[in-house]
Structure formats: C-alpha cells, structure tokens
Amino acid sequence: MTAPFIDLGVHHKPAGMSDRVALGFTKVLRWTADTFFAERYGHRAVVLETVAAVPGMVGATINHLACLRRMCDDKGWIKTLMDEAENERMHLMTFIEISQPTRFERAVIIGVQWIFYLCFFALYLVSSKTAHRVVGYFEEEAVISYTHYLAEIDEGRSPNVPAPEIAKKYWDLPAEATLRDVVLVVRADEAHHRDVNHGFANELAGLPVGPVADCPPHVTLEPNWKKAA
Ligand SMILES: [Fe+2]
Ligand SMILES: [Fe+2]
Image (cartoon, rainbow, N blue to C red; front, side, top):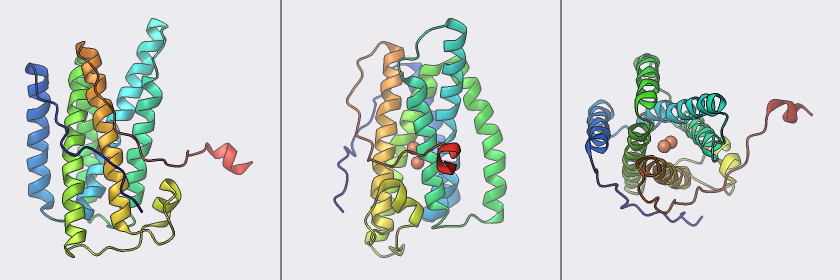
C-alpha cells in the first residue's frame, strides 16, 4: 500500500493571545499524555481518540444552533465537523481492536469526557476561533504521536499485527493490510483535521486559509434504516 502523502512539518505559528493560550493548553495536555502513557501507543490511541471525537460534535452542535437562530447558511461547516467526529470515532473503533483499555483507563475516559466536553463547549461559546485553534494544535500533536507509533512498529517494539477488519472495510484496505497501514491512514486523517481546524480558526481571525491535506478515502457510513432495507 502506498502511504498517503502528508506534510509532517505543518505548524501554525501562534499570533496573538488566543493562539498562545491554545498552544499552551495543547502542550500541557501533551505532557500529561506523555507522562501517563509513555510508550504504550495502543493504549494512548484508544484513550486519546475518545477525546478527539468530541470537538467536531461540539462545533457542529453550536454552529447548527447558531444557524437556526440566525436563519443563515453554515457554509458547509456543520457537515465538515460531523464528518470529523465520525472519522475520529472510527479511529477509536479501530484501535479498540488493537489495545484494550485497563479498568483504570476506562475510569479516566469517563472522567475526562465529562470535563473535556463541558470545557470545550464553554470555550467554543466564548471563542470559536480559539477552540478551532486548540483542535488544530491537538491534531499537530496527533500527527507527531502517530509518527512515533510508526517508528515503534518499524523498529519492532510494537508487533505489526494484521489490520482489524473494521479498518479494512472503512478505508478499503487490501486483505493483507497491517497495523502499519492503518496508522498511515489514521495519521493522514489527523493531518486533514489539523489543516481544516487551523483553516477555520484563520477564517474566524480574518487570516488567509492555507491548503488542506487530503482525507484518505473511506466508505460512507450509512444510516441504519438503509442497512436494514
Ligand atoms: Fe484520530
Ligand atoms: Fe484527530
């Protein structure tokens, strides 16, 4: 399988207080994750994907409500953010086949979801620009983490097990695909979210919107009434 091309070096240089707050918050969370998980990349992926799937749904909800109140068009933001949330949930459903969280990690996931959902919702209401910048920086870190995970696999510290069936179906991977192939498409998804969210923050700040990395092709998840038909 050819690796999807992504620019690993993308970094939005913070400009102004809002960006500095977003970057500082991201660095604190990065340090916490590094301390908590160390090199346990499978566990790290499962726990962090439960968090990564939250902002898209919060942003979609708040934009949806704002469009209803203002009776205006959303310029495609709502579907973009809902697709991001769905894509992150598929990352979680994939990595749960690779690593099972411990009981302690499951408790952490529940606590973190309460705190993160409420804090991110409040942040988005106060400053959607800062909220999208936070996600842009989170995704920069996700690209770095999955690059480290690839090195773990390539250097034999994490076994390159066969790709889970759910991942093969979702990204239409070949039958012989492995965990390495999965990490490559997941990392490309994160680069796409990174550019989309920095782009949204730039648009809200009145700055030029940069190029967006392609999202690797994946199947469309169908509503359950269609599946039943
Ligand atoms: Fe993800
Ligand atoms: Fe992500």
